[in-house]
Image 1 (tube, rainbow, N blue to C red):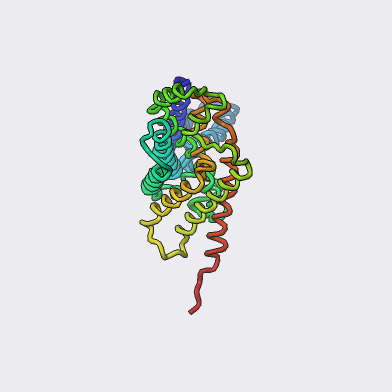
Image 2 (tube, rainbow, N blue to C red):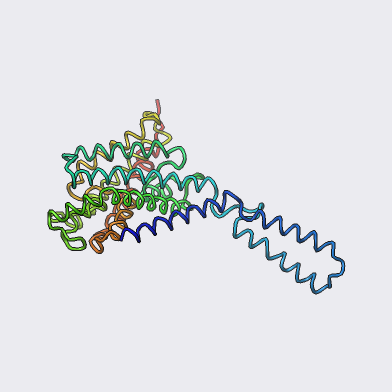
Length: 337
Protein backbone atom coordinates (compact mmCIF):
# COMPACT_ATOMS: atom_id res chain seq x y z
CA UNK A 1 0.00 0.00 0.00
CA UNK A 2 2.80 2.40 0.89
CA UNK A 3 4.45 1.56 -2.46
CA UNK A 4 1.34 2.56 -4.41
CA UNK A 5 0.94 5.72 -2.35
CA UNK A 6 4.57 6.64 -3.03
CA UNK A 7 3.91 6.30 -6.76
CA UNK A 8 0.95 8.68 -6.48
CA UNK A 9 3.06 11.27 -4.65
CA UNK A 10 5.83 10.86 -7.24
CA UNK A 11 3.38 11.35 -10.12
CA UNK A 12 1.99 14.48 -8.44
CA UNK A 13 5.50 15.90 -8.14
CA UNK A 14 6.19 15.13 -11.82
CA UNK A 15 3.00 16.93 -12.85
CA UNK A 16 3.95 19.99 -10.81
CA UNK A 17 7.47 19.90 -12.23
CA UNK A 18 6.13 19.71 -15.79
CA UNK A 19 3.80 22.62 -15.10
CA UNK A 20 6.69 24.69 -13.81
CA UNK A 21 8.74 23.87 -16.89
CA UNK A 22 5.80 24.82 -19.09
CA UNK A 23 5.81 28.49 -18.14
CA UNK A 24 9.30 28.96 -16.65
CA UNK A 25 11.27 27.92 -19.74
CA UNK A 26 8.83 29.10 -22.43
CA UNK A 27 8.77 25.73 -24.22
CA UNK A 28 7.54 27.16 -27.51
CA UNK A 29 10.38 29.62 -27.85
CA UNK A 30 12.67 27.26 -29.76
CA UNK A 31 9.76 26.14 -31.95
CA UNK A 32 9.05 29.76 -32.84
CA UNK A 33 12.70 30.30 -33.78
CA UNK A 34 12.66 27.17 -35.91
CA UNK A 35 9.54 28.39 -37.65
CA UNK A 36 11.20 31.71 -38.50
CA UNK A 37 14.24 29.88 -39.85
CA UNK A 38 12.12 27.67 -42.07
CA UNK A 39 10.18 30.71 -43.30
CA UNK A 40 13.41 32.51 -44.28
CA UNK A 41 14.67 29.43 -46.04
CA UNK A 42 11.45 29.00 -47.99
CA UNK A 43 11.61 32.61 -49.17
CA UNK A 44 15.05 31.98 -50.73
CA UNK A 45 13.68 29.12 -52.80
CA UNK A 46 12.20 30.60 -56.00
CA UNK A 47 11.41 27.26 -57.66
CA UNK A 48 8.46 26.38 -55.40
CA UNK A 49 5.21 25.71 -57.22
CA UNK A 50 2.02 27.60 -56.46
CA UNK A 51 0.45 24.46 -54.95
CA UNK A 52 3.35 23.94 -52.55
CA UNK A 53 3.28 27.60 -51.54
CA UNK A 54 -0.39 27.28 -50.77
CA UNK A 55 0.31 24.19 -48.64
CA UNK A 56 3.09 25.96 -46.74
CA UNK A 57 0.77 28.87 -46.05
CA UNK A 58 -1.87 26.58 -44.56
CA UNK A 59 0.75 24.97 -42.34
CA UNK A 60 2.02 28.36 -41.19
CA UNK A 61 -1.55 29.43 -40.41
CA UNK A 62 -1.99 26.38 -38.19
CA UNK A 63 1.31 26.49 -36.29
CA UNK A 64 0.65 29.68 -34.26
CA UNK A 65 -2.52 28.09 -32.94
CA UNK A 66 -0.53 25.06 -31.82
CA UNK A 67 2.04 27.25 -30.11
CA UNK A 68 -0.74 29.20 -28.45
CA UNK A 69 -2.15 26.03 -26.95
CA UNK A 70 1.27 25.04 -25.67
CA UNK A 71 2.01 28.49 -24.28
CA UNK A 72 5.04 29.03 -26.50
CA UNK A 73 3.91 31.95 -28.61
CA UNK A 74 5.29 35.24 -27.32
CA UNK A 75 2.06 36.99 -28.26
CA UNK A 76 -0.10 34.77 -26.01
CA UNK A 77 -0.25 34.04 -22.29
CA UNK A 78 0.88 30.66 -20.92
CA UNK A 79 -1.68 28.19 -19.63
CA UNK A 80 -0.49 28.76 -16.04
CA UNK A 81 1.20 32.07 -15.28
CA UNK A 82 4.23 32.34 -13.06
CA UNK A 83 2.25 34.23 -10.45
CA UNK A 84 -0.53 31.66 -10.35
CA UNK A 85 1.94 28.79 -10.10
CA UNK A 86 3.71 30.53 -7.23
CA UNK A 87 0.37 31.06 -5.50
CA UNK A 88 -0.47 27.38 -5.97
CA UNK A 89 2.86 26.41 -4.41
CA UNK A 90 2.16 28.70 -1.46
CA UNK A 91 -1.25 27.09 -0.94
CA UNK A 92 0.31 23.62 -1.20
CA UNK A 93 3.10 24.41 1.28
CA UNK A 94 0.79 26.17 3.73
CA UNK A 95 -1.79 23.39 3.75
CA UNK A 96 0.99 20.84 4.08
CA UNK A 97 2.26 22.59 7.22
CA UNK A 98 -1.21 22.73 8.77
CA UNK A 99 -2.01 19.09 8.06
CA UNK A 100 1.38 17.64 8.92
CA UNK A 101 1.77 19.50 12.21
CA UNK A 102 -1.92 19.22 13.11
CA UNK A 103 -2.42 15.54 12.31
CA UNK A 104 0.99 14.89 13.85
CA UNK A 105 -0.34 16.34 17.10
CA UNK A 106 -3.37 14.04 16.91
CA UNK A 107 -1.11 11.04 16.24
CA UNK A 108 1.13 12.00 19.12
CA UNK A 109 -1.85 12.23 21.45
CA UNK A 110 -3.56 9.01 20.37
CA UNK A 111 -0.64 6.66 19.84
CA UNK A 112 2.05 7.86 22.25
CA UNK A 113 0.13 9.82 24.95
CA UNK A 114 2.70 12.60 24.51
CA UNK A 115 -0.03 15.25 24.44
CA UNK A 116 -2.57 15.12 27.23
CA UNK A 117 -5.92 16.85 26.96
CA UNK A 118 -7.69 18.62 24.13
CA UNK A 119 -6.16 22.00 24.93
CA UNK A 120 -2.64 20.77 24.23
CA UNK A 121 -3.73 19.44 20.84
CA UNK A 122 -5.50 22.73 20.12
CA UNK A 123 -2.34 24.65 21.03
CA UNK A 124 -0.37 22.76 18.39
CA UNK A 125 -3.05 23.55 15.79
CA UNK A 126 -2.80 27.23 16.75
CA UNK A 127 0.94 27.10 16.07
CA UNK A 128 0.45 25.24 12.78
CA UNK A 129 -2.16 27.66 11.44
CA UNK A 130 -0.17 30.73 12.49
CA UNK A 131 3.05 29.50 10.87
CA UNK A 132 1.25 28.48 7.67
CA UNK A 133 -0.44 31.87 7.31
CA UNK A 134 2.67 33.90 8.10
CA UNK A 135 4.79 32.02 5.55
CA UNK A 136 2.31 32.13 2.64
CA UNK A 137 -0.04 35.11 3.06
CA UNK A 138 2.08 37.55 1.05
CA UNK A 139 2.11 35.15 -1.92
CA UNK A 140 -1.38 33.66 -2.13
CA UNK A 141 -3.40 35.28 0.64
CA UNK A 142 -3.10 32.07 2.70
CA UNK A 143 -6.54 30.64 2.07
CA UNK A 144 -5.28 27.10 2.81
CA UNK A 145 -8.89 25.90 2.73
CA UNK A 146 -11.19 25.31 -0.28
CA UNK A 147 -14.18 26.57 1.70
CA UNK A 148 -12.42 29.87 2.36
CA UNK A 149 -11.37 30.14 -1.31
CA UNK A 150 -14.98 29.65 -2.41
CA UNK A 151 -16.14 32.26 0.10
CA UNK A 152 -13.61 34.80 -1.20
CA UNK A 153 -14.65 34.17 -4.81
CA UNK A 154 -18.34 34.52 -3.92
CA UNK A 155 -18.33 37.30 -1.32
CA UNK A 156 -15.15 39.28 -1.95
CA UNK A 157 -14.05 38.73 -5.58
CA UNK A 158 -11.21 40.86 -6.90
CA UNK A 159 -8.69 41.06 -9.74
CA UNK A 160 -6.17 39.16 -7.62
CA UNK A 161 -8.64 36.39 -6.74
CA UNK A 162 -11.87 35.25 -8.39
CA UNK A 163 -13.64 32.08 -9.51
CA UNK A 164 -10.89 31.29 -12.04
CA UNK A 165 -8.47 30.56 -9.18
CA UNK A 166 -10.77 28.49 -7.00
CA UNK A 167 -9.99 25.19 -8.73
CA UNK A 168 -6.17 25.70 -8.89
CA UNK A 169 -6.14 26.76 -5.25
CA UNK A 170 -8.32 23.83 -4.16
CA UNK A 171 -6.23 21.28 -6.05
CA UNK A 172 -3.06 22.67 -4.48
CA UNK A 173 -4.61 22.60 -1.02
CA UNK A 174 -5.68 18.97 -1.40
CA UNK A 175 -2.23 17.98 -2.69
CA UNK A 176 -0.63 19.71 0.29
CA UNK A 177 -2.98 17.85 2.63
CA UNK A 178 -2.12 14.54 0.95
CA UNK A 179 1.60 15.19 1.38
CA UNK A 180 1.09 16.17 5.03
CA UNK A 181 -0.96 13.06 5.75
CA UNK A 182 1.47 10.84 3.87
CA UNK A 183 4.46 12.14 5.83
CA UNK A 184 2.54 11.64 9.07
CA UNK A 185 1.88 8.04 8.03
CA UNK A 186 5.54 7.52 7.16
CA UNK A 187 6.68 8.74 10.56
CA UNK A 188 3.98 7.14 12.71
CA UNK A 189 3.27 4.04 10.62
CA UNK A 190 5.03 1.62 12.97
CA UNK A 191 3.54 3.25 16.05
CA UNK A 192 0.05 3.09 14.57
CA UNK A 193 0.47 -0.61 13.75
CA UNK A 194 1.63 -1.34 17.29
CA UNK A 195 -1.35 0.56 18.72
CA UNK A 196 -3.75 -1.42 16.53
CA UNK A 197 -2.18 -4.75 17.49
CA UNK A 198 -2.33 -3.90 21.18
CA UNK A 199 -6.00 -2.89 21.05
CA UNK A 200 -7.23 -5.48 18.55
CA UNK A 201 -8.06 -2.90 15.89
CA UNK A 202 -8.66 -4.11 12.34
CA UNK A 203 -8.21 -1.60 9.54
CA UNK A 204 -11.23 -1.47 7.27
CA UNK A 205 -13.51 -2.77 10.00
CA UNK A 206 -15.63 -0.58 12.25
CA UNK A 207 -12.91 -0.59 14.89
CA UNK A 208 -10.51 0.97 12.37
CA UNK A 209 -11.94 4.41 13.09
CA UNK A 210 -9.98 4.41 16.36
CA UNK A 211 -6.74 4.65 14.39
CA UNK A 212 -8.06 6.28 11.18
CA UNK A 213 -9.10 9.41 13.10
CA UNK A 214 -5.50 10.59 13.12
CA UNK A 215 -6.05 11.34 9.40
CA UNK A 216 -9.66 12.35 8.73
CA UNK A 217 -12.41 13.43 11.10
CA UNK A 218 -15.24 11.27 12.39
CA UNK A 219 -18.24 11.54 14.67
CA UNK A 220 -19.97 8.79 16.60
CA UNK A 221 -23.12 8.27 18.66
CA UNK A 222 -24.71 10.00 20.41
CA UNK A 223 -23.74 12.67 17.85
CA UNK A 224 -26.15 12.48 14.93
CA UNK A 225 -25.50 13.44 11.30
CA UNK A 226 -27.61 16.57 11.73
CA UNK A 227 -25.69 17.60 14.85
CA UNK A 228 -22.36 16.96 13.14
CA UNK A 229 -23.40 18.98 10.07
CA UNK A 230 -24.51 21.85 12.29
CA UNK A 231 -21.29 21.75 14.30
CA UNK A 232 -19.06 21.81 11.21
CA UNK A 233 -21.15 24.53 9.58
CA UNK A 234 -21.20 26.76 12.65
CA UNK A 235 -17.51 26.21 13.35
CA UNK A 236 -16.50 27.11 9.80
CA UNK A 237 -18.89 30.08 9.79
CA UNK A 238 -17.21 31.48 12.89
CA UNK A 239 -13.78 30.87 11.38
CA UNK A 240 -14.75 32.55 8.10
CA UNK A 241 -16.38 35.44 9.96
CA UNK A 242 -13.14 36.01 11.87
CA UNK A 243 -11.02 35.81 8.71
CA UNK A 244 -13.18 38.20 6.70
CA UNK A 245 -13.68 40.62 9.59
CA UNK A 246 -9.96 40.71 10.44
CA UNK A 247 -8.95 41.24 6.80
CA UNK A 248 -11.72 43.66 5.84
CA UNK A 249 -10.21 46.93 4.52
CA UNK A 250 -12.65 48.89 6.67
CA UNK A 251 -11.37 47.25 9.86
CA UNK A 252 -8.60 49.50 11.15
CA UNK A 253 -8.65 48.12 14.70
CA UNK A 254 -6.30 45.21 13.96
CA UNK A 255 -2.85 45.53 12.45
CA UNK A 256 -1.79 43.01 9.81
CA UNK A 257 0.82 41.41 12.05
CA UNK A 258 -1.83 40.34 14.54
CA UNK A 259 -4.12 38.68 12.00
CA UNK A 260 -2.34 35.28 11.65
CA UNK A 261 -2.18 34.50 15.40
CA UNK A 262 -5.77 35.69 15.88
CA UNK A 263 -6.96 33.32 13.15
CA UNK A 264 -4.88 30.57 14.75
CA UNK A 265 -6.45 31.31 18.13
CA UNK A 266 -9.89 31.16 16.53
CA UNK A 267 -9.11 27.68 15.23
CA UNK A 268 -7.79 26.62 18.63
CA UNK A 269 -10.86 27.89 20.46
CA UNK A 270 -13.20 26.13 18.04
CA UNK A 271 -11.27 22.88 18.45
CA UNK A 272 -11.71 23.02 22.21
CA UNK A 273 -15.46 23.47 21.82
CA UNK A 274 -16.35 21.29 18.81
CA UNK A 275 -13.65 18.62 18.53
CA UNK A 276 -15.39 16.39 21.11
CA UNK A 277 -18.32 16.23 18.67
CA UNK A 278 -16.80 16.07 15.18
CA UNK A 279 -13.02 16.41 15.66
CA UNK A 280 -13.37 19.97 14.29
CA UNK A 281 -12.53 19.77 10.59
CA UNK A 282 -13.65 23.16 9.12
CA UNK A 283 -11.50 22.47 6.03
CA UNK A 284 -12.40 20.10 3.15
CA UNK A 285 -8.76 19.77 2.04
CA UNK A 286 -7.48 19.10 5.56
CA UNK A 287 -10.04 16.29 5.89
CA UNK A 288 -10.17 14.77 2.40
CA UNK A 289 -6.42 14.71 1.64
CA UNK A 290 -5.45 12.56 4.64
CA UNK A 291 -8.47 10.32 4.01
CA UNK A 292 -6.94 9.44 0.62
CA UNK A 293 -3.73 8.49 2.41
CA UNK A 294 -5.70 6.39 4.90
CA UNK A 295 -7.51 4.56 2.09
CA UNK A 296 -4.26 3.51 0.44
CA UNK A 297 -2.81 2.58 3.82
CA UNK A 298 -5.49 -0.06 4.37
CA UNK A 299 -8.43 1.65 6.06
CA UNK A 300 -10.48 1.33 2.84
CA UNK A 301 -14.19 2.17 3.23
CA UNK A 302 -13.67 3.33 6.80
CA UNK A 303 -11.42 6.07 5.47
CA UNK A 304 -14.24 7.88 3.65
CA UNK A 305 -17.05 7.34 6.13
CA UNK A 306 -19.18 10.54 6.26
CA UNK A 307 -16.54 12.39 4.24
CA UNK A 308 -19.25 14.30 2.31
CA UNK A 309 -20.29 16.05 5.51
CA UNK A 310 -16.79 17.44 6.10
CA UNK A 311 -16.82 18.88 2.56
CA UNK A 312 -20.33 20.32 2.27
CA UNK A 313 -20.78 21.68 5.79
CA UNK A 314 -17.58 23.79 5.80
CA UNK A 315 -18.45 25.29 2.39
CA UNK A 316 -21.93 26.27 3.61
CA UNK A 317 -20.53 27.66 6.85
CA UNK A 318 -17.74 29.62 5.15
CA UNK A 319 -20.16 31.40 2.81
CA UNK A 320 -22.48 32.27 5.71
CA UNK A 321 -19.65 33.57 7.90
CA UNK A 322 -18.10 35.62 5.09
CA UNK A 323 -21.49 37.11 4.23
CA UNK A 324 -22.11 38.15 7.82
CA UNK A 325 -18.72 39.87 7.99
CA UNK A 326 -18.59 41.65 4.62
CA UNK A 327 -22.25 42.12 3.69
CA UNK A 328 -23.73 42.74 7.15
CA UNK A 329 -21.19 43.88 9.74
CA UNK A 330 -19.01 45.92 7.38
CA UNK A 331 -21.65 46.68 4.76
CA UNK A 332 -21.67 50.35 5.79
CA UNK A 333 -19.05 51.14 8.39
CA UNK A 334 -19.09 54.90 7.88
CA UNK A 335 -19.78 56.62 11.20
CA UNK A 336 -21.35 60.06 11.20
CA UNK A 337 -20.06 62.42 13.85
